[in-house]
Length: 281
Image 1 (cartoon, rainbow, N blue to C red):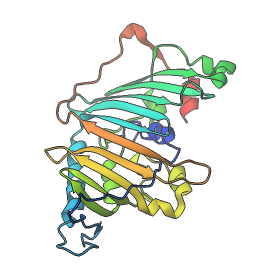
Image 2: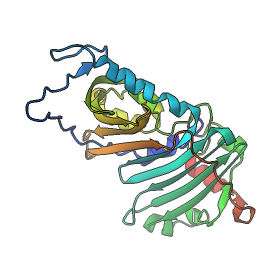
Image 3: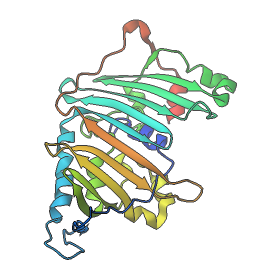
């Protein structure tokens, strides 16, 4: 979620808790030869032909279809979720985001719709903090709030740029692959250097900084569909400081078959108040 890409700022905020579970090492079946782990240069670190260089290239190629801007996606991690669609043919996109749960001091749900040149957001806040702050209560309108494009220009939380449509920035992430191996048909595992991936959208700078040197060897798994397009990417972020290990999972589907986002009905739209812009700036 988002001047650079849909919901990039919101998603990064939602997934601010580094999610890492140590990547379980793959084991071959009895009598099989383990797949070689391949460095970023494509050289196998185990004996055998260096064919695994193709594994990284396969993952790099798997993200190309995303740039065409016609797909559905999900993101999940750190107790937050996001799902939506991008439909470049109609210059529209939509995302529903949930941050925090019933026990959170402040939980947030957003329904964001972009239909060029307009944008709307419906916001729901709950929890003790929301209940105690009158200014926040004013935002619980139960309606879509129409956004002034001049006021969200450059805002990564509410804006949108159809030039960079991937909410998770998978192309940026896969470029950081340092080791990769094939684990089956259309399945891969390895490590990614996320130290320069703040622009990806699925991680923010604070999360990456908290990881320290661990950011250079984040375990991941990935899957591609029969057409070689990325269908799933899972980052297993290690524990960092007081943040527990968790995973961040992103999926892609319906390539070329997404539908246009739906504009909210006129009777459910109000102009966004100043408090809304303040909340996201």
